Length: 123
Image (cartoon, rainbow, N blue to C red; front, top):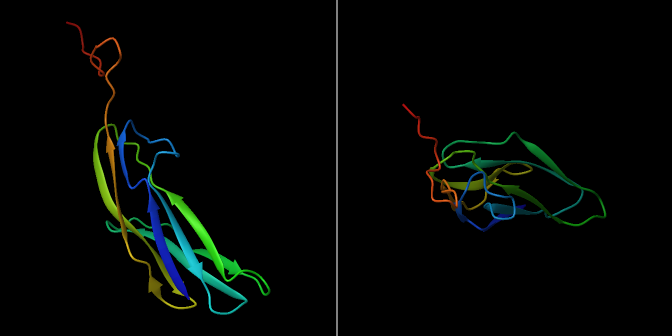
């Protein structure tokens, strides 16, 4: 059993949350040695955020390779979020994919009329 991880658009800068077609996306590829099989796995980030465990089924007579994808987003107004993501497998064997680094930089857009993007109170 092997798991490999690839990333796309691993650096984003713009308004947040980023649109799904611009946000960092990651694809895990799972390959099993024999069928049938079930793989228990979860997505894990370096700072400890984890998804709950999932099960991927490989039925008898089916393909030995399957994929899952996750898109990373943030709802922050500004700042940069840097992290790494990997996939942890607990069954049928314990293994972890290589980690892939990513960053999301949230930039507040200035309106086209040149006014401040945040309201200014009037006395």
